[in-house]
Length: 122
Length: 107
Image (cartoon, rainbow over all chains, first blue to last red; front, side):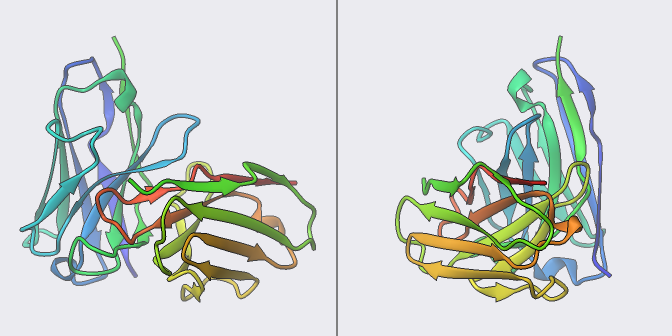
């Protein structure tokens, strides 16, 4: 059974930093791209970033480029998202999602974690 | 960026009804479209991929159709468990992947 378990959310002041983790199990982690998707309060789903199965390719939405860094440790079956220079508008539930392919292209998301909440406020 | 527009934003229906949600892409995405169901506090669930392929484990009352720029999700014989928010997502273009704004299906 595929399981994705996020951790690392919390309350942070603007300008602060956080690292999220997503522990994966039930599939060959290194064979699949992984993404982070977020949902701000009362809003829809917004894709944030993708990393290929090997970790060699990463892409970001324009709203987070330069502030967020996605990475993975295939030996630990864990996905990460480092968030710097947090803004109030980054307040959201952050989901990790398993991609449907090993590369960063043509991915839909066939499994999702339960999400971790980040609240950015002064 | 490819913009995805869903309609309606809210849909009221009853158990046993058949409903249709439309998703339009701002440019052709061939059949690279997925549909998800999302309930508050839960992980989103994949229902349909490649516009019309039913994900394993998803009930057969869910069906998808369309190609190019116009797509539909149809739910036949609504069940109480189906009341949720539904999102379409294009995956023709990875930078960025984009979702529709969501359709809330309510009783």
